[in-house]
Image 1 (cartoon, rainbow, N blue to C red):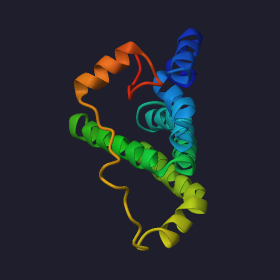
Image 2: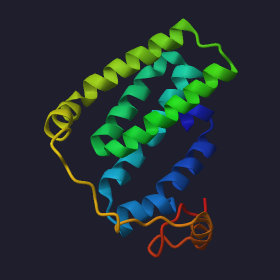
Image 3: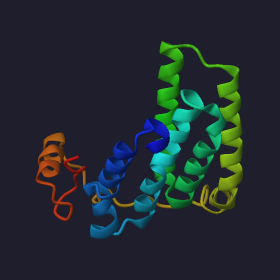
Length: 169
């Protein structure tokens, strides 16, 4: 946040809210989903790197590469969702503004290349050992999907140990 906003008080407030957000507390302490908990630690780094590549200082492309690689080391589903969100934002930016400079495309290419090199340590074994090996998915009875109203009401009660919620903040 300090790199994005240049304000110390805003950065400290964001750090406190993000670190002690109910969703992160539930992931780390209530349900012990340590892969996703660790991946959420690196989401701000990836998002600020994405911001720098396309709207800020494009020379800071390495933040995007490091953030994406660290997410990959922690949780592949979070990596997939993060890249999906980046792609949607990028497509919307191209369609609405249509001002993608050559320098920013080069920064993105450098970031993708370095991220793939950093992820190769886990990506190569994942591709060779898991894909195409007829792995089974979890049973359908293991779903915990709430309605939107349930999500909002449980989030307003701010109890991370009782229900799935995104927290008050």
